Length: 129
Image (tube, rainbow, N blue to C red; front, side, top):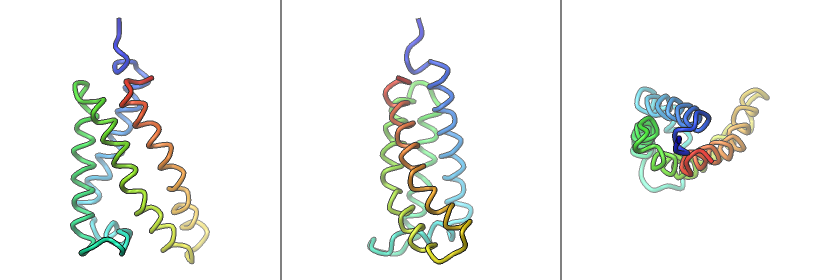
């Protein structure tokens, strides 16, 4: 009998989130300037520590999701992370409100996508159900 976490569909979702978070984490480290610009200015201190901390959290979470033994924990961590970075997506949408239609579509499209990512992370956390 297979455990819920080993179900192929749940595993694919976990691996997709692993790739997404891994790529985002690398991006935060390699090109922090882009991410610095969307850190909400209401947060205390400069943006770089937030950029690097979120990149590190993304990489750790990707690692948790990649391993079957820690996948459920990774799902919970991913859901929390997607909630935590939502204000940066709102900040990006606000900052890009006067840009062209394509840029506005990207920035606004990220907002509902975050809900989909949270739902997928919770699915992994619950063992693929």
